[in-house]
Image (cartoon, rainbow, N blue to C red; front, top):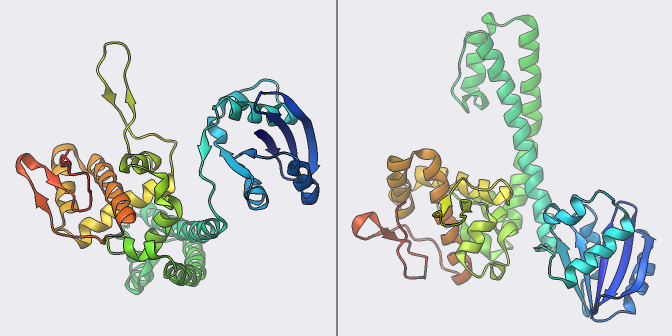
Length: 362
């Protein structure tokens, strides 16, 4: 077996190859990214082959080019490669060779390389998210001007016709000329963004119809086409998460734990480094779920935790339970069920969790 370490850059890549004994069989060589035939011909002489590439903007085209019979593509988590990131002496040829040797030693933290279809879905979802963020920022700037003159408007009311009328009739006399111009420009920006967001929402619905898992996830109250497609894009194939706890950890919903010596295990806050798209989707889905399905077992679980620990902890804890249920749904193909199954002492059984073990309300 051979291992090729590829240090990928914008215009070129550096390739070094070692065998399973750790011998350098091909010294680091720089190849322009436009010379794909040269890269393929170089690697053709080494089979079976594992190719190791760090996460970077250049990995997708390398994955599409090289992944196939005889080649196992390994995507390395760049942030966790401390040896390379913290090195005082960095050179492309050394980094490429080090990637190959670390793979032989089993020290590469792997990342699941998404298929081209999932990457396309990710571009669509992130495009919409950025436009929505721009629209929200424009609305926040309008609210800031209203606050400067002692006025307040309910959140979300600004996007309605009544909100426009209120600003024109009630707030306009209190605003200066430049403030009025500023608000008009923010309104124009929001008006330009609205049709773009609607267009992307339509594309998301169309794309979601082609994925069975998206229709399954939309049976959960609070998960619409956007959130369902995002979960499917980030979590599929579900087989890469053997247990629900693995999906929970990947989404960054499991609290950090620490233990040293004879001290007991201490649970802390959720980790900052995780799939923030997946975590945010689950947490926001809980907020929507408790609104549209207040009688479901998940909403009852949220309410019990909120009364004991507050809404911040309750949202994360309930999102963690929702992630476990989503894992079971994607694994079994079973749709969501609303009916709660209660047990004594405030415990309940999630209808979709097939482990048979009750989940405590805390």
